[in-house]
Length: 526
Image (tube, rainbow, N blue to C red; front, side):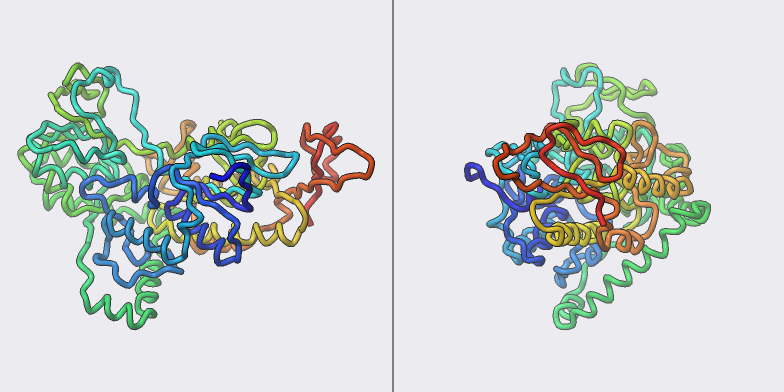
């Protein structure tokens, strides 16, 4: 990284969010940007998650950018390697590689109020940027629970997102911890190979059949020759999911029929009543993400699999001990225990205008204006920020909506002219969050009777969007300057030393006095 490098925009991460942001910048005519990536290749979560059986639970034609359709998806639900290959293709198609700085993990980002820019320290050096777009994603940092005795376990231990491909599972006694989206794909993939598989289940998931099939050569030919057919396919997949949203957000009782279908899916493979009882959830379907698999239940019915209906509580030597006292000797422990979603590690590394980190600002729960702008962090935008997640559709739809917002944000800065920054008003952030949380009260995620990774430590849902993707697209179509304070760097006064920024000047009409010696001016946006 060049010494004292300065760019207009720094994008953090090269998954769907980061690559999408880079493409949008190029399409907006902005080439003065970098993409900072801690790994040595693009792909984000689809690079990191390479475990056996890894695949997407959103149909392929909906889980891709609208501006980069792929007529050659091989299956209706694509596997990890095909999605990663797609992201590599997007990188090359739009000429993004010259902008990417691999091996550049961001260690600290600090707002410089004197110069209205961010100072970004990375593992490869320091640079500055006028605007930061953080696209690290909520599924990037694995979470392994603190289990007594884990540090002295003599066998192999790894998380599903850090799969050890050099470790041979054949004939091994394996403990699978967790029953989330990764675990239900891993279990059927490794069950035929291992000697014995012990599944430690804290909460059973609702599982529906995964109706996957190969996409025929004729279909792919048609999509290549007539792109409108692929667009129609994508539109149909999107429309079906838009119609489903009301059941999740307004009428959770309507999901009872779906529960019956899920129970039938289980009953077809699980004939043992005792095992079926262990696997039957006691909460409303949809409260946790509905999982898709046609192989999970058949794998659990195999004679070399034990289902323990209790979470892992302790490890004694090579013995795993469940909360109900069940013990099992194992050679390896695989954690499918999710990620730091409501306590994003990147938030610890972002220091805003007031000297506090983003994590400190979010100590009572994550919140950001329209899912992207946090108060006190000027010119800092998050892709897949608070309350932008989905429970039933494609996150690519939400990412593209946020990219619209990023593009208009940059346009507004250009219109304002000069050296300016935008900082979300605390009142606007609070009003947006109140509206979101009020809508959340009726949703299945809050009323369904479960504890999920959608909820933070205080039980607040700071993860999911309580509406349709259409509503979110409308909400992020353009920046409302009334929701921001405009920060300007004052013009130098002849014969006078430049002021040093030692505080924050409130917007005009706030009734507060400007901080002494402030090197920036704030004004009420039009």
